Length: 130
Image 1: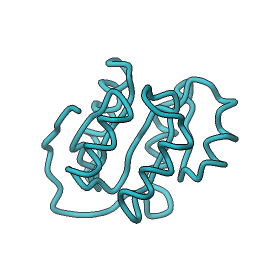
Image 2: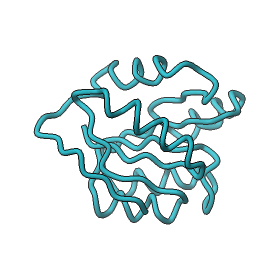
Image 3: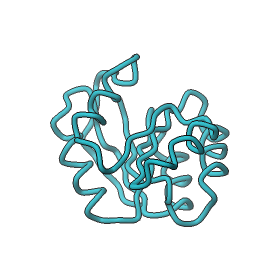
């Protein structure tokens, strides 16, 4: 599974990279620090999944989710937020999953592994930052 990580905080992206590097079925192929970069990365890198901070700068969160859906059919969107109360709004926007940044890393890995979110073969370990 090809994944793009999008968050404006370096430490969050770094932690997610480390977490994803230990998953055999997952290849992080890109990073983004804002909405514009994420949209460009999705166009260029054709990911299967984006892990995106709900508060990503540059676009209203619900609008960003809608734009991601328009760009790539079948794209899975998992939202990360330090504010657990954002879960209802994220779900209303149509995300495939929500993880609080305060939860354990195992919560995110479990979400990636469940329900066919994880999968794929022939993955690369290339990464680009947008």
